Amino acid sequence: MRAVVLVGGEGTRLRPLTLTTPKQMLPIVEHPMIERVLGHLAAHGVDEAVLSLGYRPDAFINAYPDGTVAGIRLSYAVEPTPLDTAGAIRFAADHVGIDDTFLVVNGDVLTDLDISALIAFHREHGSEATISLTPVDDPSAFGVVPTDPDGRVQAFIEKPPRDEIPTNLINAGTYVLEPTVLGRIPEGRRVSIERETFPQLVEAGSLYAQGSEVYWIDTGTPDAYLRANADLLLGRRNIPPAPDAVEDGSLGEGVWRIGEVDVASISVTRSLVGKGTMIDAGAVVDSSVVGHGAVIEEGASVLGSVLLPGARVAAKATVEGSIIGPDATIGQRCVIQPLSVIGAGVVTASGTVVDGGRVPAGV
Image (cartoon, rainbow, N blue to C red; front, side, top):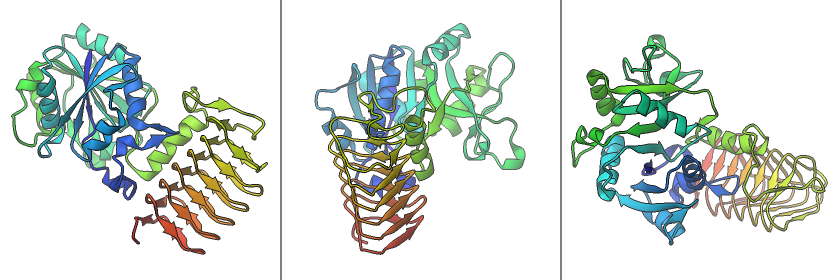
C-alpha cells in the first residue's frame, strides 16, 4: 500500500516556531511529528509514501538522506506553486505513478485510527473514496460529514455555521482513494478536495465514510501542540511517550528520560527529560517535555510546557503552559504565561513578562 502525506502548509498558527521549522518536523515528545505519522502508517502495511511538499521542502529531504523512515521508502513531490489539498494529492500521486488504491493522510494529525479497518470498509462497500470521521465538540471549524446508515456520504459541508451543523462527525484527514479520483482533479491549478472533489463524489454516490472515536488530534495550534505532547506524557494514549524513553523513578514520580541526563532537582514530576538535559537543584518541573540539551537553572519553574532542544530557562524564571523554541533563552526572573510561543534562538531580557504572546527572533 502506498500513501500520500500532505506536509506542504506553512503552519501559520504555530508561528514563530514554523518560521524556521516546518510544522510536521516539530518534535512531539522528542520525535518529529512526521516520524510518528509515518510510523503509524507502517504499522498498517504502508511501505511507500510520497511527501507532498511546499513550504521548506529541504527540511524534510535533508532530515532523511537515505529516504527511509520507519521502514517506509520515501519520495518527495515539491509543488512548484501551492495547489491546495486535491491539487497536491494529484501532483504527488502523478509524481510517483500511483495507479492502485492508496491512502492520503494529513501530516499534522496524530491518531490511533485502525487504518486497516478503514481500508477493509472501503473495499467492502466498493467505494471510490472513503474518509475517516471523528466526533468533536465544536464542528464549525471543520468539514462536517453526514452519512446514511450504510456509510454513504450525503453531504460534505466545509466549516458550517454553528446553527446549521447536522452532525458532530468531522473529516478526520485520513482517506482511502481509488486512482479514478485523480481523474476528477484538474491539473495545474489550486483544487480543494473538501470544497470541490468530495462534493463531486457525493453527487456520484461514490463517497463513503466511517466514524471512529479513537484518539485524534490536529496539532496545528499552540494549545493542540501542547496537548499532543501532554497526551503522550501523561499516559492518555497508553503507550510510552517516546520509543526510546525509559521510566526512571529515581528522578521523580512519573518521570521518563532519554539517554543520560543531569537532574539535581528533587522536584521533577510527570515529565520527560531528553538526552543531555540539565536541571539544577531547586528547579521545579511538572508535566513538561524538556528537550535534549535543554537547561533549567536553580529556582526556575517549568509547568505544563514544552522546551524544544537546547532551550534554557534561567534562574528564578517561570514558564507555564507554553512552548519555548530550540536554543531560546528565557532570562532570569522572566514570566512566560500560558499559550506563549517563543521562537528559535530568542533571548528574553531578564524580568520580561510574556502573556500568551508570540516572540520571534529579532524582537
